[in-house]
Length: 375
Image (cartoon, rainbow, N blue to C red; front, side):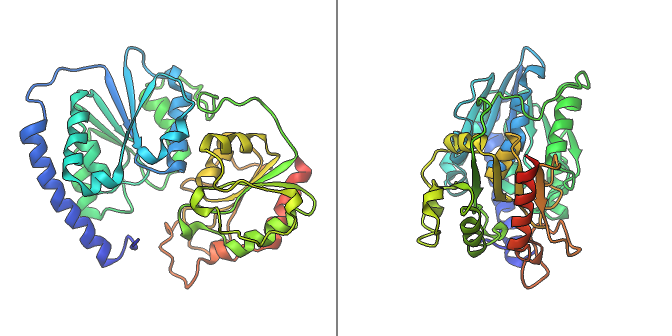
């Protein structure tokens, strides 16, 4: 069950995890942490986020040639998302962990911390957009001599908890309300590169190196992993049926969404439903070759942005400015029905998420039509 970050149940859960953290921390200092540490040239980047968060952080991979030489680099991410970087062959080494096992199995938790401590990291950079108890525990007990954090604040931790963990870091860089893309770009240029470079690239084809190719279909990703950010199944069905009258359409999404459209699509001769039938990298290739991408505030929309495709994204106002819009232009349109409460992190004060759900099908079609004319 998912609780509001402002609910009493969530607060109790947070402090229960904080209480457990002290037992793990005590065990770490008694039985894991090395008594003497020899400085190494080893750096850890840590991001416990989902697809969108990791694609934002992939800017580091794209600019790895600008990173200080003579260091070994590691990147710790969720095991579920390792396929995002399956074709990456750069100098940053990926490590993965199982978040559910870490949360539920003390033996796994201790072994992960022991493994991290064994690397004897000189620096750990916590580049998570969201900071929770378990995120902070992994970063702070990673064994690094120097801890740095990209975000000063958190929507998940109250004032006491965020102040407690902030004291563990040598430096904190940015406020949470700053756009994560801009924050990461500035982080690379001013922190990792010591203001020595002004050529940091948003996308440099280190991660997704596809040939430039544009085919005649529109790619549509109707779903998100977070149901609160979905524009609506019925709206997408109507939109797909309308668009597919005059355009070829490719539908993309994960396996658990495969059956949601059922038998509601009409122009099947123009629709290639690949929901649940592609790997992430195959989905990236389809997005790379489309003439236009339509989606929600989701990982595949981040991917379309990274691949510099024309976009109509139906994102609403809950996270407005935090990730989207970014690189907004005549070919990148982000839709939000602004009702004056943008940036609520989806802790909605209304009966429904009107900023998202009241974006009409007519508005979306109008913007798709406009974009097709521009390209």
